[in-house]
Length: 368
Ligand code: UDP
Image 1 (spheres, rainbow, N blue to C red):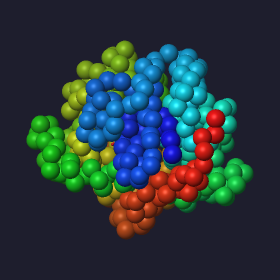
Image 2 (spheres, helix red, strand yellow):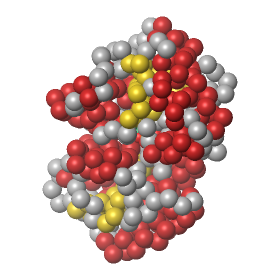
Image 3 (cartoon, protein in one colour):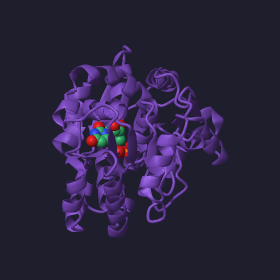
Image 4 (cartoon, protein in one colour):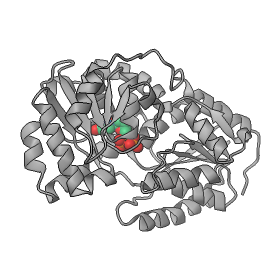
């Protein structure tokens, strides 16, 4: 059986690492890994391939930057060519980026089945480019891997037939468990950044709606400065955020109150998550990793697609320009949380996904 997998951004490398590993363990499978090039720096791309043992891509399209239309359009053209060339039984896409949308749409237009990992997530905010990518991808997919109860309900509500939906749990839990142990043994980041266990706040933010808006970015900087008066703040800073910090003249201010470093490899970030006392983020993945590590989380957004974390109080929103970040941190740290709830499965989601792919597409001949 042949699968063509499309990845391009950091969280997709992490998800694909565990699913591709499970795929490689099954005989008779050939995976064509396509890297769109959306993320390309050493510490946003290469390091994940090295540390997580991801195979060298069959093709790297080198497409990054430009407008959403330019990026997605260029990806559509090149992925279509690759699908025609490799004739996969199924195209596998992850999450909610332009690479996800381009992979799904190219395949669907060629009548090649599409399987979507992390289906059914909704922030209900259509101003987010990711939300548009999620909705379209789900509606052209043939096999939808839904990680949570809420995601299944959403897909059914939107009219997706239940026969296409597979409840999987979250592959990020698989990754966190698999690589968490390795991180404990190999990561030296606590020492390198001179941090003490449970005595620092870990903070990441990079969403366009936060960092492209100078007022909101300033709200974040002011809020983190207040948090830093109580506990050390560590920010592995996304390249987009760094660029905006410089152009809005906020870099000096944030560097005075927080420890700012380059984006980290997966092992190092897992290690910091585990030892932090609180996590502040606008990342989807890190909200869940906070939960996996039993660390309370404050999300710097107006809403989140991971709604189950809000209901249990494991995560709370700090709404930009409305809420006080430091107050939310206090509330999070003072709340008594039940970490025993099962929200994301048992860490074997990648096997469930691979089983379903084989069941659905294993015996078939190529579609094209
Ligand atoms: N991550 C990482 N290094 C960092 C920051 C994040 O490896 O410096 C990982 C993080 O642990 C999570 C994933 O990247 O697994 C989240 O990616 P991102 O925040 O870019 O995207 P999102 O989850 O919001 O789609």
